[in-house]
Amino acid sequence: MATTRLLVVTTDAAIARWSSRPIDTGHPGWVLTPLVLAPEGVPVVTDAEQAKAAPEVVVLSAMAHGQQEAGEAIGVAFLAAAAGLDQERRTLYADVVLSSLNEAARRTLEAMMKSGYEYQSEFARSYVAKGRQEGRLEGILEAKANDVLAVFEVRGLEVPSDVRERILASTDLTELDRWLRRAVVVSDARELLATTGS
Image (tube, rainbow, N blue to C red; front, side, top):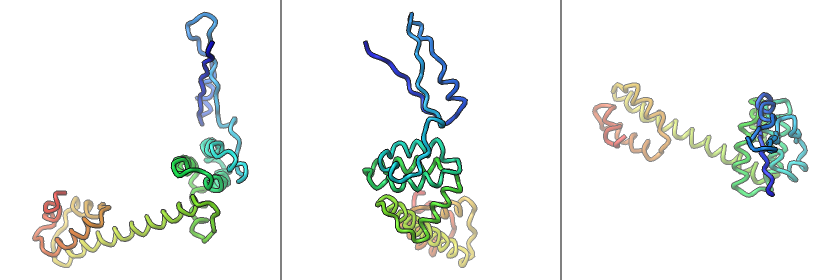
């Protein structure tokens, strides 16, 4: 006869208490008692070797304890463990861990990454590189959008707030380049969007 198990994973103590109550299935002699994994049942993983040996446990540790004082140490342990993961798991786990950490822990890790600390894992190095690349792109987009607005200002053309917001919200360099060229010749700022089908 097959055995049925119900596992409940939660970071909420009240849900853990509620979920641990036996469930009467309505079948004689069959009461289902859920297995509940709550924060107190998850170890606080701050040791790099332990994290490398069980990366899924350090992810659970971040989810259960990342808002506490240990959040930073858990995050650093995860970075050490990430080196041994395939790209798909590395990306997924990193997203869960980073979103589970308290704000101070996230800030500290970001500061460590910017300070020149040499990370041992490829994941950490690629994460830092990606952040820097995204930062550069964001700066280029902002500068280009401001160039478009500057052309309108020099030409004395009024820019309605919705047009201004659309220009500043653009994340497409090709579009911004096209708008910059068009801003020199259009007679009304709204024509800028109309000519690109935006």
